[in-house]
Image (cartoon, rainbow, N blue to C red; front, side, top):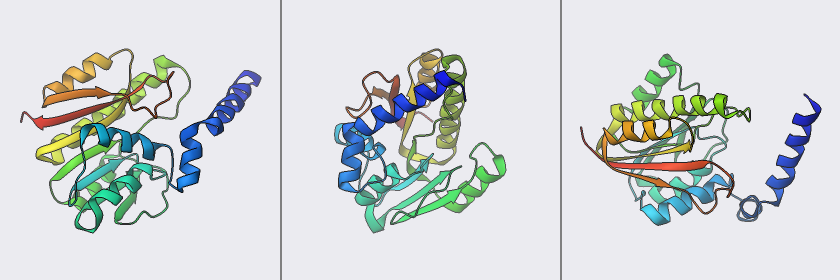
Length: 207
């Protein structure tokens, strides 16, 4: 690792542990600060209710699954997946594998074997710090989540995906608008101010 990259990593860790939401995650004993992002998104957009069937893409370490589980409870179904391992979350089925692998994807969809109410994706690539590399990789994952939503969402289903402002972002939003009547771009209070991270919330399928 280069000296500059090592310094950058140390600075990131220092900022990370000073983050109020990281501190709050430790205090409330939840998986990650992502828990509070989803909590904020839901307070403003009312995505969840008891009894829902949900797919959580890119779920590890489990912050989103943990939050969703507390709302949908025993009457709901949550299926989470990630290329990385994830410790068990109550009322959540976890499958480990690469969602870009068609065999794993088909296994995931066969396991669910029903229409779902919400597809949520917090997937992100391993970040290099280079926008020209990171943006296309994230857009690939965004489009994969969109493709999955086309296959599994019920008529009233919703899609929630993490993306970045940047090149081709507007193109992605227009692609989503061809499939959903309502499309909203939302930045939670718990997202870091300097971050390009935003969340796209889509509902009311067109077809």
